Length: 349
Ligand SMILES: NC(=O)N[C@@H](CC(=O)O)C(=O)O
Ligand SMILES: [Zn+2]
Ligand SMILES: [Zn+2]
Image (cartoon, rainbow, N blue to C red; front, side):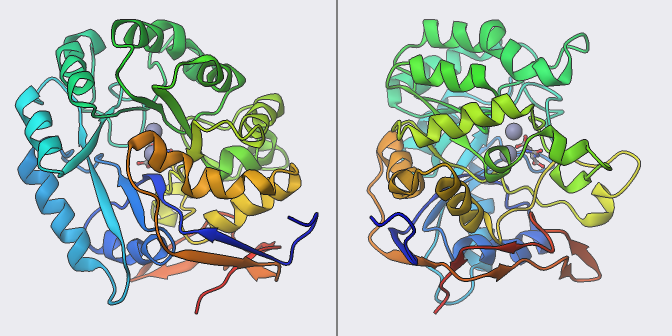
C-alpha cells in the first residue's frame, strides 16, 4: 500500500457493538448502519431489557421489518444477563442461532442498566453454560461503587471482577467492550486467545480534554467516559499493533439532542453515520492503514467464529461534510463530528 492512498477498498465490515434502540428511533437510525455494515451485534439494553427468547425474536423481527429495501444486513442478537435469565434460554437461543452472545451490565453502570447484575457471582452458573456451548460473554467493564472515581471505574473492574471471571472460566470467550484505558488494552494484549476488545471511534479519536476544555461538549459524553490522552494513545498503539483481538465496535448510542443538551445529559455518542470515516482517519494518523481492514472486517468474525463477509466497499480521499444535526421526526440527533469535514468519504453508489 502507498503511503497516502487515494482510495481504500476493504472487505465489508461488521459492527461488533451497536445500540439500535426500538420503535421509530430504531427505524430511523438502522439504515446508517445497514448501508455500511453486513452484521452488527445488537445491544439488548432496551426498556425493558431483552432477557427472553420471545423478546429477542420479536426485536430481531422488528429490525428486519425496518430494513430499507436492498440493504443486506444481519442483526446478531444478544441477551441481557441478570438473575432472571435461565441457562435454558441461553442454550436454546444459541442452539437456534437466535442469540449470538450475552451481555453483562453491572447494575446502574450505564444507560438502561438498572436491571443489570448486582452480584456477578450469582450468574456464574450461566457463564459455565456459555463456556460449554461457546457463547461469547460481552462486558460493560466498569464497577459502580459510589466510592470509585468515574475515571477509575474500568481499571478497577479488571481486578475486582474481570480477573476472577477469566480465572474461573478460562475457555469462555469474553469481549471487553468499548475499552478506554491503558490498563484494559494491556490486559487484553496479555490475555489468552479467549479474550478480545472492541474499540470505539470516539475513544480512538478523542480524550477528555476534547470533551471538557473550553466548554463542555455533551455529544462526546459517553460511558465509559473519555480518559486522559495517555490512555487514548494506548488504545491507538493497541490497534496499530495489528493485534488480532481488537476490533471495530462503534457503540453508536443515539439519544435525542434535547436529552443530551440538558442539566443532566444522557451518555452515548451517535456515531453510526460516519464512524467508518473517523476510524480510517485515525488509522491513517497513526500510520496503521495496513491494519485497518483486519480491524474492521477480519478480527471480529474470527473471534466470534463467523465467516468473513463477501462484499467490499470503498473509502475515497475526498472531503466529507458531517451535518450539524440530523432531523428525526419533530426531534433531532447530533451526530459524532457534527459540523466537521472528514478527509475520507465512503463511496455510496
Ligand atoms: N456508551 C454509552 O454511553 N451509552 C450506551 C450504553 C453503553 O454502551 O454503555 C447507551 O445505551 O446509551
Ligand atoms: Zn457499555
Ligand atoms: Zn454500548
